[in-house]
Amino acid sequence: MKPGQVLRGTTTVPGDKSISHRAVLFGALANGASHVRGWLAAGDTEASLATIQTLGIQVERHSHNELTIHGGRFTPPDGPLNLVNAGTGIRLLAGIMCGQPFSSVLDGSEQLRRRPMKRIITPLRMMGADITGTNDRAPLTIKPADLRGIIYDMPVASAQVKSAVLLAGLFAKGATAVVQPGPARDHTERMLRAMGVDISTEGNRIVLSPNGELKPINLTVPGDISSAAFPLVAALLVPGSDITLTGINLNPTRTGLLDVLQRMGADMTVTETGLEAGEPVGTIRARHSMLKGVEIGGSVVVEMIDEFPILMVAALAADGETVVRDAGELRVKETDRISVMAAELAKVGAQITETPDGFIIGGPQRLKAATVDGHDDHRIAMSLSVAGLIADGETRVLDARCAGDSFPGFAETMAELGAEITVRKLV
Image 1 (tube, helix red, strand yellow):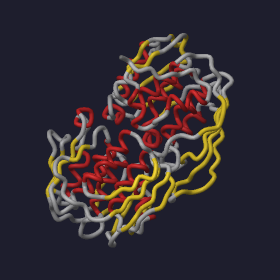
Image 2 (tube, one colour):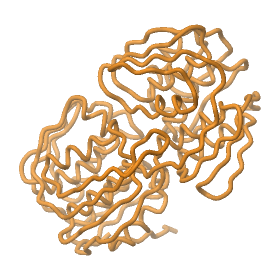
Image 3 (cartoon, one colour):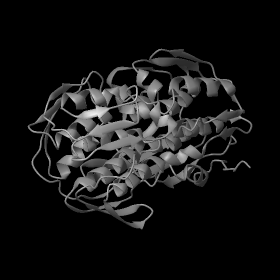
């Protein structure tokens, strides 16, 4: 990456990762053929797709991003189900597999094996599930069991935990209720409701009553707001930039970053243009802006949990102090994203103070080019790439191939907008 190139133009980003996971997993449960366009063909979602095929579900692949999933009854796999790096995939699938009449083992990469699973094991066991982990981590061994509906008060708002419990509730006797302490992504509720499931939401209480087979879905997956964050922040930071992103998912449980950037003074226009499978979709225009530091905590943290690495880059360019709290979840993502980002940005001259549940960044700070490492974490690799666009000199990001886990074509999209960014294969 080299600085100084103005970003201009109109583009979109790949399909929403969270919705793409759910489209294949829920489509596999439906009775009939589900048609999905704009599906995200990336590392994590491909792992979920391969898993349902291992479970005997037939999938027609019309193109890279268009699928027909012939849902129905699962068949026992010959060996462990490999979710690779997909944290969403393994946690949602755990809820589904607890309701199956055969045993299964859910596993993945060493990175996935480090991620905490007790948060789903505990409520699933409360429902009667026979699920065990290795020190409360993957691999997860699941055996057939009779499930019963429960009322589960989640200690921390988490879409993945909520989804695991609700999906197990599809196979349980009686209603299942989840009470969340604050807002969390509601893609599961929206999609299950669209598929005919009796699911209601009152405030932070979600109630699912099993009512027979799921109906197939027919949807176009909107662009992922988490992927849109990278070109958006780049446009805000690079002088003279003016970009427009179309077809982006504007689900209010996902737009925390947009709210925070506007509080920071971002020159940004958000326009809703319609709905897709119950998800609001629209256009975002972003222009170069002089940002100011803000304090971030509470419920908005859940609404932007995946966007904090790129927010750290924005904060480095902001005038004043940015303080983030209540974001301890960042330490148990693909990496400890607070510690890793602080260490890698220090290589380009940034000064960041870590706290147990967040960080403090004073700005603006001038960055100098360096060689940094993506740590096999897609959001870190892309955030460091954006930092390189405002650093003096040429910045190299090693281990950046993982960007394809959520944003295949990231470098090409940024280059189309005018960024001087190239991909080099190391020999």
